[in-house]
Image 1 (tube, rainbow over the protein chains, first blue to last red):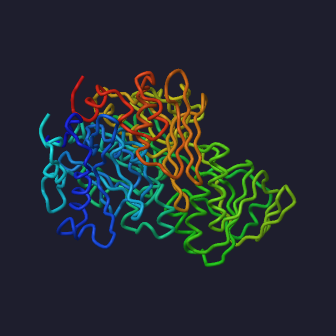
Image 2 (spheres, rainbow over the protein chains, first blue to last red):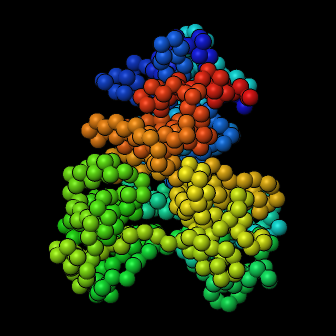
Image 3 (cartoon, chains in turn yellow, blue):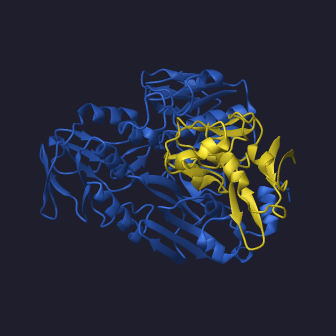
Amino acid sequence: MKKVYVNEDWCLGCHLCEFTCAAANSGAPDMIKAFAGGKKPVARIQIEEGDKINFAVQCRHCDAHPCVKGCIAGALSVQDGVIVCDEEKCVGCYTCVLSCPYGAIVIDEAGHKIRKCDLCTRNSHGEPACVKACPNNAIVFEER
Amino acid sequence: MNYVIIGNSAAAVGTIEGIRQIDKTGKITVISDEKYHTYSRPLISYWLMGKVTDKNIYYRGADFYEKNGVETRFDTRVTKIDPAAKNVVLADGSTVPYDKLMVATGSKPFVPPMNGMEKIASCHTFMSYDSVKAIKAEVKPGMKVLIIGAGLIGLKAAEALNEYKADITVVDMADRILPSILDVRAGSIMKKHIESKGTKFILGTSVDEFSEHSAKLKNGATVDFDMVIIAVGVRPNTELVSEAGGKVERGIICDLTQKTTIDDVYAAGDCTVSHDASSDTDRILALLPNAYMQGEVAGRNMAGAETKYENAIPMNAIGFFGLHIITAGSYDGEEYVEEHGNNYKKLVFKDGLLKGFILMGDVKRAGIYTSMIKERIDLSDVDMDMLKERPQMMMFSKARREEKLGGIKR
């Protein structure tokens, strides 16, 4: 299955992927409207910045998926290999945050829910928006 | 193959999904003494406080049994397992034969004998959908509620009843709250937080005697109430297995395949004893993720695969009145502690490994710590300053990051 991978030697730490991800999943038609009026939509990809290297982390859609197995609400499931969250069912207990070995599940404090990468399968982009947004080709969407 | 599952919660669902990973056609029968489609037990407090609807309390979709070819027998109690005849006996005396049996009977509320209990006008436990339905039918704004037990269940009940503007008092014999997951300091921060929302605590004492609407405590105080909720703990439902000759200690004893000491009989979830890999001790890990994963492993083995359940550790993610806690592992070792307001962090190290942690308030990315405990990551390969700062992949070696994030298999 194609997944998003990050090359930490190429990542500039510019955070464009985060802004693009947040906008893509906000339901707004573009970046300007997504952030208009001080709105802070949540990104499902997170940059870690270091002295020399930077990289982005998002859901690995891993085979073990402890988040799905541990979800107390039955909100997380695997659909055609993609781990998705039914945000209506999520109660914000954060058992998935406790379980994810990559720290890839994001807390939306305003919504008292979790948000996670679904490879843009359920928004209007259809393909991972972070990949298209990366100016240095540090994020790729491929089979490994 | 003919599979029978006693129970219908997380461990049972894990068993069904585990069996179906291997065996798509064998017959599966679920027998449950409750009358509901599988629902999430930890969601009952959310349901009571109105955060979860009748529809969303269900743990799997409405078509779950049909999709998995499961026959259900709800509102039906199993009274006996007969391993020689390989059947289970139901309350009406009829029998159901099995080739492989799963005992996923969970636990029941522990109600210690207390003087005058029979006089209490309204006494409840907090364990099942029916128990919260009964509470909801009675609760009114301003109602005085006495909760016995300041553990996870008692405080989740307090949080839910606070939504009804109930006047809540929690009494516990221990001198602190949530002792199963928090240390003294974190417990005291959480206690202040819950008190600030209106719930009162009377700790270090217990009930001397109940009357219809009040409780006299051993410290001399009297608490008036309209309703009592008993939440002092749970006991595993082990009788079916012990009476059938299976080994039971604090819970049902299983091997790493989740098989009990009786041939073709498996068990999973809160009724079983698990091996805690963080402290290398055997204990009951009454946690939904543990129940599901044990069930899944059992189901696979029942269907003929060879799968082991390893690296179980105590772990909890829970919040009270908006303050979140994530904890995992065990707390015997060298401590690193940070505290800022309601944010509390404790990391426990021993033998060159991260053994346990408590995060309260800021719980972001806690699973990175959890994975270090489970995978026994050697701390000599980890940047300790980064580890203490926050959970982050940056603390690991480039090689581990490539493996974890880059899809590089080693």
